[in-house]
Length: 330
Image 1 (cartoon, helix red, strand yellow):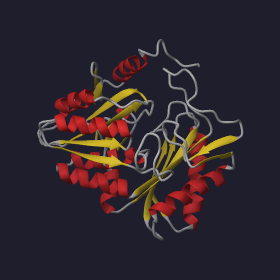
Image 2 (cartoon, helix red, strand yellow):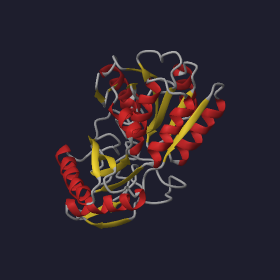
Image 3 (spheres, one colour):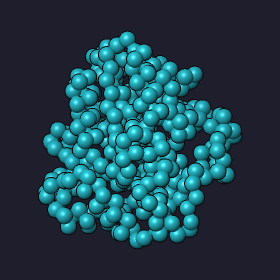
Image 4 (cartoon, one colour):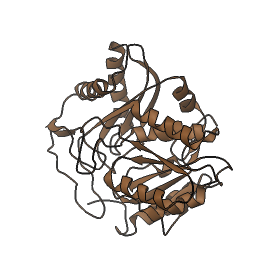
């Protein structure tokens, strides 16, 4: 195993310390328990948005803390759920009286621990559960579909509404709407190595890919021989379109996400391939995002997310955002 690390035990803390120091104008990091907040207090009367999950998916979620997105993020150890005490401590720090909205990916540990934190809270709270992965219905980590890259889009769009004064229930309803209108699927050419494990999570042959892989290396629909980029893109998109059923000339957001080890050049190639197929189906790309946002350590792979748009979603997507990983309109 080759990684920049001093010890597996200190891996997360040292990474958080570096993240906090590099972006101290945007975030503050707390330890014991670990959580990240905006560097400035939550505005009075603003709904506080909190997300989190296992580390290894950066910049999701800590890199999305800031104006127009999250108020706090709770990082667990690599691919391990954060604990209820992290979520409770983060909630107490950022709750300004309008309530807390938890944005939770559908993984058994995340769901259980966020539910426990919600029960421990004294103030109003609600949750949005993301389950956009169309690849498989159940996996070793979930009951039902997995929450993957569309979580980033939920955090951006709901973050805008919260910033503009939306109520707790309005923010929850919008988050559920984004999730319902999104579908994702990923593919991997290689595994990743969790520092504490010291070896790849799974093995792939030099000419193999895992189609429909999860963001922790969970198995997908099948293992197959590597194909051309256009063939892979078409298969990912056809599965998403079959599930999401966008209509002719319907506006969509196309999100091509890297898993951590795929060059940006290849992600833009996937975008080009996706545009060709969508253009042929009269599905209009109204907004786009390309880059590494929901990663799996150093996994070589990518995912595609489609989100059906309306004027409300476009307005909140376009609004100003300023985080370590995403910023425009400021």
